[in-house]
Length: 122
Image (cartoon, rainbow, N blue to C red):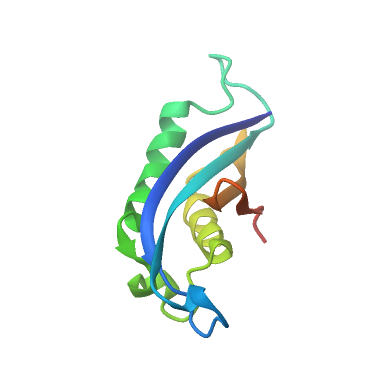
C-alpha cells in the first residue's frame, strides 16, 4: 500500500552553466509529494500515521523553504535542479521513514503543475 502526503516550498535558484534563461536567478513554488510503501498495517489499520509522515517531511522542507538554494550546503557543488532537490529530500528521509512495516518509496518534485521528477532512490 502506498501512503503519500503533498506539501510545497518556495525558493530561489539558478542553474550554473545552463545554456539559457535558467542560468539567471529565479524562483519557484515547488510542489512535493512524498510516498511511503507499507507492506502491512499496524494495529490501528494504518501503514504509517499521516501525523508522523507530515512531521518528518516538514523538517526537511523547512530547511529548503524561502532560501537561495544555490547557497544551501547540499547544492554547493551541484545545481539545485528538481532532480537534485528530489534526491536531497529522499536522502534526508530514507532513514527516518524506515521500519519493518514501511519504507520511503518515492519523492516527487514539481517546478510547475506540468513539469517535475519522481525519484525512487538508488
